[in-house]
Length: 188
Image 1 (cartoon, one colour):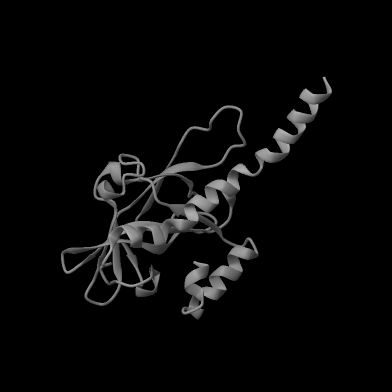
Image 2: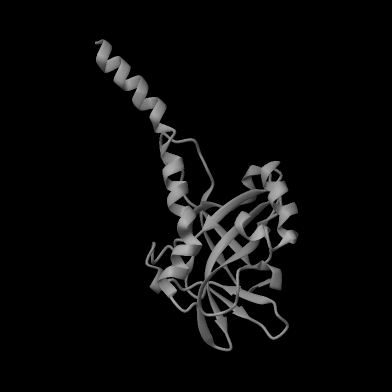
């Protein structure tokens, strides 16, 4: 969201809420039936005549996989959802949308989250499969333009470049463990 805030001042209060931990945020990219196979992803956001969007998961395979999306944390949840933009029945490629998922007590209308089993030996998170049943989004939900990209591959890379940064950042917690393990191995 931050890269868009420079030209979208309406996003600044949302970023402030994230930074103050008043809202939990997730990134919903992968789909249960498709993983990271972007070309096969089925979640759509159709542009409606009034400028709003209809976010929809047409099949169970289109449910977004893994990120925590339920109100179990007693904190409102919002997601950046990766969906195929449909304008006048034509695909305009994949775009990012800001989607409110839940309040601190209940799911938003049209948003369904199926809680996945907790993995043994881990700190429990409410990992879910999340789907959308014709969720209406305001025009401000779209991050970016409705225009079809000239180069779909470059556009995809532009939208998803932070995913690889996040994946690297998640693994940095292992550095301290490796340091301790190396010390123990070297000592003994």
